[in-house]
Amino acid sequence: MELANKVALVTGGSSGIGRETAKLLASAGAKVAIADIDTTGGLSLLEEIKNSGGDAMFCTCDVSNESEVKDWIKNVVNQWQSIDILVANAGILAIGSVEEASNLDWDKVLGINVKGYAFCAKYAIPHMRKRGGGAIVNVASMASLIAFPGCALYNTSKGAVLQLTRSLACDLAADNIRVNCVCPGAIETLQTQQFADALGLTTEEAINQIAPTIPMKRIGQPQEVAQAILFLASEKASYITATSLLIDGGYTAK
Ligand SMILES: NC(=O)c1ccc[n+]([C@@H]2O[C@H](COP(=O)([O-])OP(=O)(O)OC[C@H]3O[C@@H](n4cnc5c(N)ncnc54)[C@H](O)[C@@H]3O)[C@@H](O)[C@H]2O)c1
Image (cartoon, rainbow, N blue to C red; front, side, top):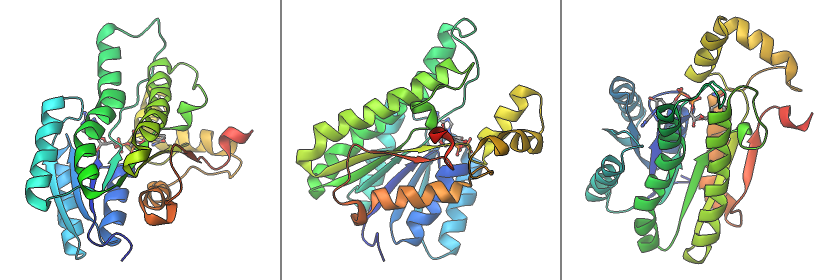
């Protein structure tokens, strides 16, 4: 199996893109350590992976809290001795302009969407070095490259994930640690529901509004992002680092 004997960390694994990624990495043979603030979703995922013959562990962990991240990764290494892959994915959507955003709003969004990614990398990197290498895949967004109107906090946070990815990639190349990000477009997850709610629409209405604006005329599924993450995390991407892979049905090419 492609990821046999690998240990993978996945944040935000209880739902959406993270959940499908955790399942796919486990089916490729990795031992998967999932962290999320949603304990119920995480435990149900754990059961699902174990019932399909995979190996996984779940920890309730807020990625914006550095000491919780440190303890999570310490627990994983105590149990499985090593770390090969980090998928930093836990993130929140924030709708609102700079004038609407409070200091607390900024702290929350940057704390989860940016510092959370950096904390996970900080505590995973020394273990990857000990293994002689590793792969980090950050889940950024097409909002890393284009600005969604009225979403300044989110756009700013996702732009930072792209630069964090490039910075880590340059700093870690000599350690044989590859660092890349995926930039999803509109993907059908809980975030789609939150986006629809903010517009006063049902999820179906929001999808029907968004789909015609995408060259492929549909929104994406979390499994389609998970496949790209698996590729970047695997040896098939052995000479790929510092890249950002758009998964947006062609949206940003228009
Ligand atoms: N859905 C989209 O259209 C889309 C597009 C581009 C990028 N993304 C990005 O993909 C990633 C996953 O989002 P999704 O669409 O699967 O949404 P989702 O809401 O289904 O999943 C996000 C997960 O992150 C967890 N989470 C939130 N805050 C956390 C914290 N502080 N600590 C730990 N876990 C936390 C949630 O509990 C949830 O399980 C996010 O970074 C998001 O910004 C999503």
